[in-house]
Structure formats: C-alpha cells, structure tokens
Image 1 (spheres, rainbow, N blue to C red):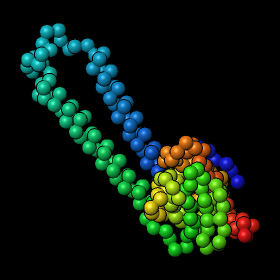
Image 2 (image 1 turned 30 degrees about the horizontal axis):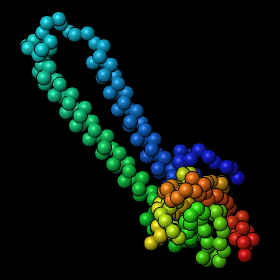
Image 3 (image 1 turned 180 degrees about the vertical axis):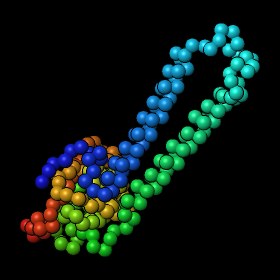
Image 4 (image 1 turned 90 degrees about the horizontal axis):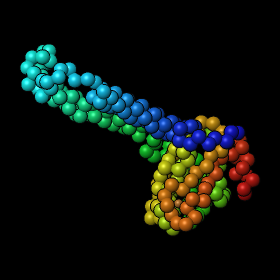
Length: 223
Ligand SMILES: [Cu+2]
C-alpha cells in the first residue's frame, strides 16, 4: 500500500486520469499562446524601423507584395485575435467533451454502493448492502466501480478525492451519485471542497482502496 499525495496530477483512476490529461492539454495550449505572444511582443519592442521617414503607411510598394502595413495589421488581428482563439477554444471544447465522457453518468449494476453523508464537520460512511457504518474512513475495493451516494445532514459540502476523481456537491436536499474506480491499492485524503463553516479546513476523510479480500475482511471486522 502506498500513500499518494501528489493530488489531481497523480491520477489513480480513469476519471481522475481524464481530468489530469485535460489539465495538461490546457497548460500546454496556455504556454504555447504565451510564448507566441511574448515573441511577437519582443519583436514589436526591439526591432528597428525599416526606414527612417516613411513609417506612416504611405510608403507605397516598399513593403513587398503583401498589401501594405494596414492590410498586414488586419491579417494579424484576424489571425491572432479571431482564428487562433477560435482554434484553441474548439480544441479545448472537444477535449472537455471527451473527458466528460470518461465520467460515468450512472452507476453500473455491479458497483459497490456506499452512502456518504456530510456533517459539520465529519463524514458518515455507510454500506447499505453490508450493513456497516464508519466515521471519517471510507474503504473501497480496488479494480471495480464504487457508487458513492452523496448527501448532507446540514449545509452544502463537496466530496473530492483528487487522485480518484470528483468533486461533487453533497446537498442537504438531494443525492448526487459519484462513481469512482481505483486502479491500485492506496490511501488518499478527501477534503471538503465547499466552505461549510469554521472547521471546514479540518473536514477530512481517509479513503482506503484495497484488494477485495482485505475490503471484505474489513467489512466483517466492522460487524
Ligand atoms: Cu466544508
């Protein structure tokens, strides 16, 4: 068993992996846009004027065959201000839709059902099929889907295990289902991701992903 702490960029399940890949793509695009912008800005700042007097655009054919300074400026504005942002947004949009498809919309029938109720300032974890309850500790079997039915007993909390997926609101007047899947054994920390009162920062849940045999043994031990 390993204790992971690198957060959302150390994904340990398919949902978190899809989110991390989207994050890296957006970082790469952001860096690319920044570099292009910085290079163009540098060229604009430091290049020397081509000729001493005729810089006002009336230099006629001195700029080669590309239509003069006004047309060139227009091309830069359309290219850099319209076409490039459009391309970047389309790429991010398509990648976002694909990442969203990695998130199961409903719980598969073989999923282990776990009810998680947020309280100020702790988590009540119960397993309706197994008839056991725990406090601030969530055990889940590795390699199979787990359906977390999230609610709250008081105010709005938010459930988030960065290495596995989330975050999803825990609402006092409804149930949100979060399907998680852990690839390997590990111990993670879920922190409340919605300010819920003075002790919010200390509202933590330990998530223990373990082989099915150990999970079953833990359930038996709780009875
Ligand atoms: Cu909170």
